[in-house]
Length: 449
Image (tube, rainbow, N blue to C red; front, top):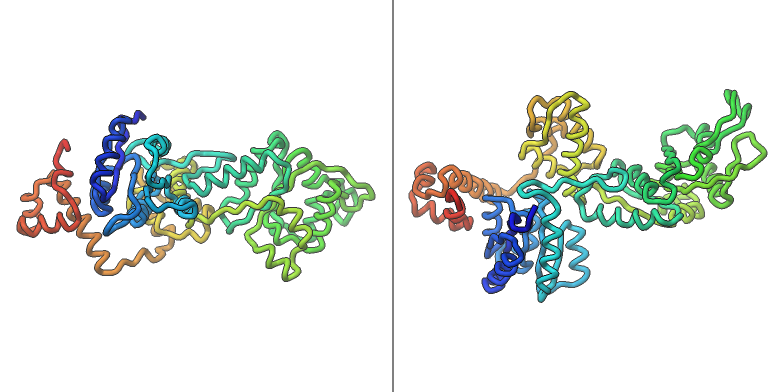
């Protein structure tokens, strides 16, 4: 998409700077839409979705941070660039962690802003939320947090260091382990995964290290363990925190000597594997309780990667939900294109204690039951088992309803105040006061403007 087609909302209470930014963006081929306050910016956004937003941080009334949060809650894929005269490095880091696309300190170079803006408008098609792009191991994300994590994975992959992945259940630790494997020089070798919590203790040693014929009752034939099967590749030990302490000592010996001894054998077999392990448990607390070996912890935790929970990367909710629809709807023989706006709003409000796994389960249930091209809010509510929705104060709810009501009236009447006032059964003067209260200009809704 050309820059000429790229509409950019610019928000600043400084009229002189607003005019300067308008000229600079127009000369670069962008189409600026100007707003003198956060409230006015929300009104502009209600009329049309720009490709990006540039906002000053410190403004009277709704400041840039509050404006970003309102935008992020309703449209997490819309890139927001914050400008401030009081920037520090911690501020910039904190802004990036919240999902702000870019952060510039005044005075800034015009080229710096334009370069950042060009990257921002490349995130997605005009008028459409930017879908998450598949990255390593097919990971779909629109989150700056996850993008930074995958950049780390690319660096870690080039080394041979063992990796420990930590994160809540359902965040996608196995997919990240596959990403480490794909980014490594071992990518042509096997990736062998085992869940240490899912296999009985009596069988886990045999699964990992193999056994010879007759090693125990029922061992009728010799069998290679996962370490031998992963020769030249990667072994992924999921839920390593649940491995029995006795077996931890044997795993430590494998890491130290780079060889395994199958059950019942007198001979060790050399192995060349990389270990990636994962857990949702606090291993340092387990060490203090003598539930995990400290020496093994340091062997496994050469590089530590932490996956943030889904509630901390809400921009991924829309991207992942849409991705799951495209993969799961055909599985159930449904022609589903996506979610109704109210349904997506319900997904965005939910805290997802089960993380990505829970989101996938909810989307699959919706796809299986959906009879329309857009999943309605009722199906999402059913899949979420009618969890409580956001509770607003009476004043907040009234204010939000009033703004939405006025916007709908002005859209229906194409900006004709007299007709809108008549439909609302209010006189023109009172109706104008309401429009001014919410900084809604009739000209915004005129046909052709």
